Image 1 (cartoon, rainbow, N blue to C red):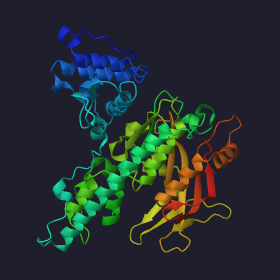
Image 2 (image 1 turned 45 degrees about the vertical axis):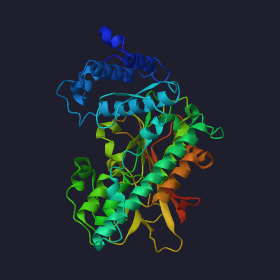
Image 3 (image 1 turned 90 degrees about the horizontal axis):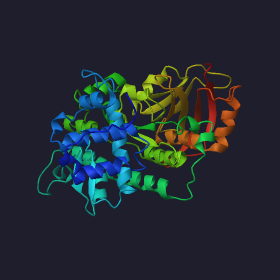
Image 4 (image 1 turned 45 degrees about the horizontal axis):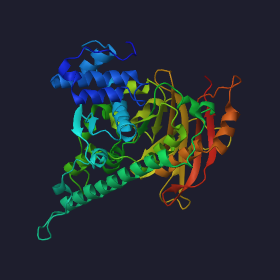
Length: 445
């Protein structure tokens, strides 16, 4: 399929429509001109919509009409439309906050479909759009009951859990907005020169954005409540959200609510902000994805950064067999361990991270692996806790520590081999202290 923007023969009524004029301004803007595929999708769906053919705007037709896929291809296996639609939504947001900030009409593609929406741009449009769509609970679900109404203990517990998690999600969304705004506007946050950096040049100098996959904290909460881990197969099928055994003290409805809602770690949002600063404005950017929205083919297309362990980001499971250091969660005892499959020198076969430990030891892992197609790299940042994941991120963002390590393992031709590092630090009120390298491995290939 050609990457040129298609020239459409339009009906006069469409050509004269101010909505189509907006579409043409968008695809001609600096935000879109270097992304012909995104322009093609936008032109395709907007032309169909303005012709009154919204019922034809779906994933199959876009895959066939824009990407040349066969009419009977399987979107559950080939996620090219979903991944490009996600980028398209981000680019539209960028346009209306930069070049198109004075537009009187706004174009968006509401999530859950591909039909474009044109709407007048009121003074509160950006607040309404960027609000946390994941908060699907109604006001009645969140409000406490009247004092005169008696409530069973389990139901009261359920409502408190939902209320606390919803408030936490609101705070997290606020932090995301603040951190991303800071990353883009803080003049002191100078980005690395990524094209010269031995690690980041492999992630931020490609023709496609780097996909950053944030952990599914709702899944982690569910696993902790039920004591049952969820593997990648069950995660993809969604069975874990419908076949739930209610733990003591709560109800199936509460656990299902937690499983259905979308929560992520505040540490993940901070890492995303740091990645934005690292990437800088000159690269093709970052595509942030929630773990539940990813499909296997997404890990074949280019560079990927995975945040969190297999417990909250099941995609890590695809790479664990290749790794020497592995995070293991003992649900019965509420403790985490690092399994060292092939101990060397003074290394231990197992490193424990227990809440009762007076030293509050935590562990982080940094792993660089090839993606599923071997066409790009995957960077895994995980830990025995959120602070452990933070310690992994601290290492890769600290050139004073990262660059000497990369220089030590560099190949004779100057390239960096695939590697993994085990870090130990302490949990200090939810944050990681300075870490110590406990061991590392370099892949022979």
